[in-house]
Length: 207
Image (cartoon, rainbow, N blue to C red; front, side, top):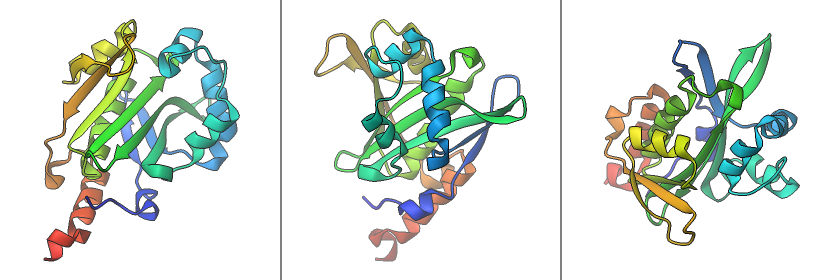
């Protein structure tokens, strides 16, 4: 499967909208975000951090923080959703996803600042991740969540995911969705262009 080059991916960002129309910028995390990203996770409620990482942590451990900031390493990516709050660009949500090229799947996880939950941010971010999955050539996307995380279970169900038992942990449930979008039909303009570029550069396109 032909994938996009990292230097090409970095040019893509998106402007989404919350339920009330507030602009939400989604972009790849950058080294300059280190302190703000750590502050974001520290400000999450204990429950939100537990739901995100399936364990009790108060902040990102050094190694995990490094992983979050390494864009493209082993086909793993981190995006932050930001908006202007009191004149400052503020992280209000994040998502991390990984392309498993051998199985044509994209695995992801996300979180939203407790103060901004209920504004449609997670729904918008999930749709954006579907565009990214399609652009990278994934045929399925999936995530894992605690069975007790009713918010994430409800979001996945409303977004058209199906549920299966997690293969390794009974406390978790896996949700999966088939990606059936042709490159020209991807609804996110930037990722439609990315997909068409990948398609044009693939060996089959030039055969």
